[in-house]
Image (cartoon, rainbow, N blue to C red; front, side, top):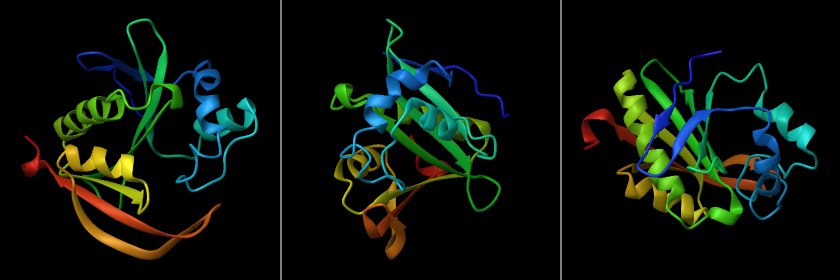
Length: 172
């Protein structure tokens, strides 16, 4: 497994995933509406969720954001993309803490970290109807690079996907 360093923001700490995080993440990942734009349907048990989170064949890295009281706030990921120097990011904020700027603040520090590690470009794929996620990416300076029509079949059907990108030279 790749090294996952602790990263801090003004308000939060981002640390490696622990099995105990599953209980805090489960209410969000078990909610059909919260999982509307994921590539798979909601989870039906904590065991199923942990199996997905800890999949040994997945080549990405996971950070769990927590507040100063240790409450789990979300999952933030980075994974190698189509070539060296390009990383894909993703994020989910727990449903009872959405709207507090957690996704933006933690994604921003993750972007800085990945660029500092040497990534030349970051990308994110987002469902065309996922307005909250689109807003986060645009606030971080990502540019919409493509609208991939009927690109992915998910549990809600055939979906259009937007591809966002951020070059290291564009991030301030």
